[in-house]
Amino acid sequence: MRFLGLNKLPIAQAHLRALNNAGVNSVKFYSATAEPKEPVVRTKTIPGPKSVELNKKLGEIQSTGSIQYFADYEKSSGNYIQDVDGNVLLDVYTQISSVPLGYNHPRLLNLFKDDKNIKTLVNRPALGVFPGKEWPDKLQSILLQVAPKGLNKITTMMCGSCSNENAFKSIFIWYQNKVRGTAKLTEDEICSCMVNMPPGAPELSILSFKGAFHGRTLGALSTTHSKYIHKLDVPSFDWPIASFPQYKYPLEENVAENKKEDEKCLAEVADLIEVYKKKGKPVAGVIIEPIQSEGGDNEASPEFFQGLQRICKQNGSALLIDEVQTGGGSTGKFWCHEHFNLESPPDVVTFSKKLQLGGYFHNDDFVPKEPYRIFNTWMGDPGKVIILEEILKVIKEEKLMGNVASAGKVLKDGLLSLEKEFPNLLNSTRGRGTYLAVNSVNGKVRDSIVANLKLNGIQTGGCGENAIRFRPALVFKEHHANIVLDRFRKVLKSL
Ligand SMILES: Cc1ncc(COP(=O)(O)O)c(C=O)c1O
Image 1 (cartoon, rainbow, N blue to C red):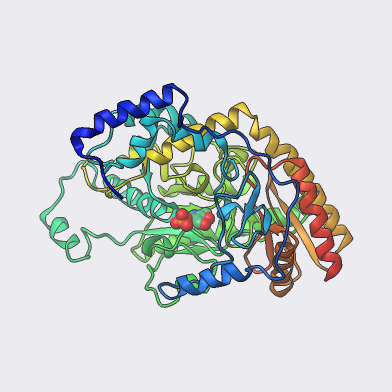
Image 2 (image 1 turned 90 degrees about the vertical axis):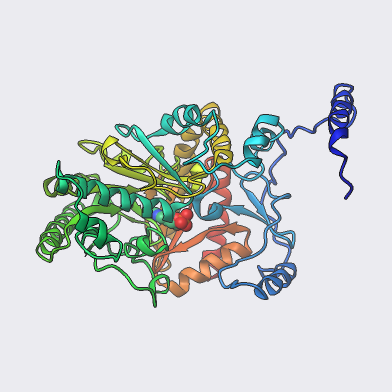
């Protein structure tokens, strides 16, 4: 490629501008393209031959065991993802619950026709040191607009795991500030932390739940307990792990039994906090998902969460709600914990996925006093915040939360009737909004259903031992739900 000499650049730009003004070679703006009417499967297997070829190529340089197929993101549209072999799948998994407006939404594509936005994208700053002039306003007007009620501070991060990881650090710092009170930092603390020893590196813990998933980075991994393969061979902290309620479904028919389960699990939490205090590893914080997602879409009742918050308060432990997967609207509320009617806001709420960048909301107590205590080079991404701003506008203008409620009802009712029609294959339909799941009888049957759904044009995901999860975009509508249900019935009949 030939580059223009620097001195020629202004002339070239002026020329381009003139051409644009004359309508010659003008910037192309995207308009809404029609979604495919229905899924189309063109290959006998998915992955098809082109995906297999690409997998081989990539396999020469990295591990590819988790790859399902290679997508063609230029051709994907709305709720439909297209693969390189021309298969067009109705995507109700959306990059593990991370695509709020579907693929190639014109409003998002057009954002980067704007000179200001493209410069924000290209000039990515080290946010903790050289933020752009618009950053405070952007945080105020975009992220704080969707902050969970009662939380007025935000720390931006990169992904879900590092949001949890840094939130743990904030919790530990908060806890030690309380312990230290007005006392001055000692020489002993300063020296001992440098060699990973107390009192500077104190023995504190984070309580988590069996079946939980909070990420794979080293600290977060100590609170993840969904699959052994995530944890094998990696040293972990000795932190308490409590039982998460295991409910009987349907919930309305098993109220008394499930209530007992709540009480049992809460008693275990209180007990473990006591045990770890005696062990010299006090519980500084408790981390929990509003719906355990990777672990199998396990729900807990509002009363359970209220009880958990009470226990945290009694013991001076922070309550961290991990909304990395549930946050962003698909449960019918922007934050799933809004369903729980908590007496007061949780102390920390982490997010990522649909919000495009990671981070956590918190109150003043969790803002570190000294610089560089919670820090990394990027600390988020202003380019992603531009996308998030537009997503939030579209959610409002297109009333997508209402959409979630109506499409979610069709999908959930349909799953409940499939459960009745095929009791030997399905049970325990559950969830809120479009954030739904149904159990299969065992892992083998579940895997076969997920694979056959894909060959019938529906991209879903598995979670836990035997659950099939649905994570459609917020633009998923009732007619999409009907397509999913028709194809699901066809698959179940064929088994
Ligand atoms: C509840 C929850 N927390 C944390 C994470 C980790 O997020 P990431 O994969 O962005 O690190 C996930 C990922 O699926 C998640 O579901």
